[in-house]
Length: 445
Ligand SMILES: [Mg+2]
Image (cartoon, rainbow, N blue to C red; front, side, top):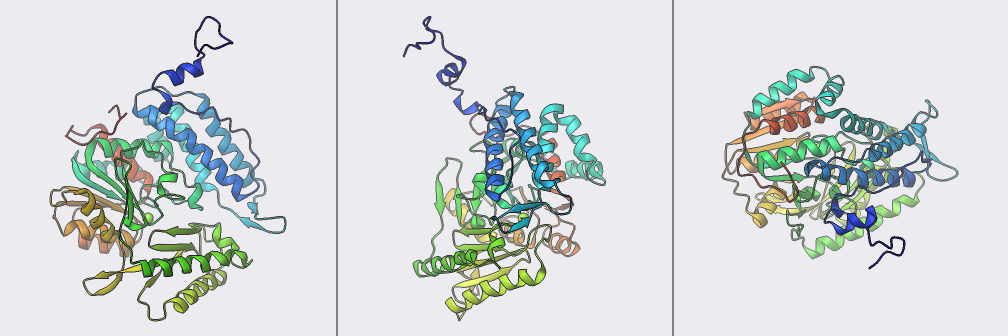
């Protein structure tokens, strides 16, 4: 259609952008000014905006396109807005729930990760390694050891947890948007060094779940939520495991009753801190503590008791639900039939479900399994039922977990932080021998 403002028929730059098939690479012109952050709604909105900028930046990097520098300015302004809340009063970094009440927030994840992203984009990867290397003790030694451990290997499956493993822990799940550098390192490794890269998280798949906080290019990773009970394959098809309809209706009733706790002023805060309330497929999770332990212990235990009470009322003989208290989250999981009767669904069951739908060829190693807590061990055990050709990297400082993992898998590397794992994977892919690994559409590498 002729443009009335341009009688010569030339196209505006915007129109040209739509004319060529570059729409998916456009970084939106969102001006993140110095936004006032007064509520969780403001915070989550701002973080969602950073995702709409971060996502196409990553896509452009993988397509070997130079990015628009104005987008870096938006990310810097997002960070300044958060610093404005965080440092306004050193004693109380408060966000208001309403006119009467406020809650203390820890925005250190958000601020730190935005700072790292802008540093990465402005200074490039080598200076970035120097920068994050200064944040951790013995960084270089860990990275060199890790590169030696991976030895340029090409893996069949790369099965990994997200939070605490490839992503630093964040005070609020909804604002734990994956940073750009994180997506570049992970997706590079996944595309070059692995055939079946799979995230298995206990968070939901979407609305609101892992898909909503990730910025890896599409079709690089298989995303599995609810411990693998639901997943999105590389063709963007969703799969969901069977759940007994009777158990599902009891989970619906449990969800309704736990949701109603938000109306109780004593319990309202648990819907905003840490994982918040997550209604998953076959599971419900509610936070009772966040990563910075900002909830007093007696209040945290009161929530645990209240949720456990509802579960006992609905399921007195314990045949439908299992309650798993991680100290930070209360998980209520719908049971499945195991070898020795009823059991809770774990990430090993999730991996087997994904295999049943996609055919991962699990007998053929090597596989790499990454995790950070005991709930990730079932993924490791599950792959070992098919082959011994398994490598594990665990991100932990807990000696008991280190002992458990090394007993299960002799090829284990332990690192103290997600950034060190990411750096190992990102560098390892740079020197990897090329193999027949799958390439997602738009990946230049
Ligand atoms: Mg984890």
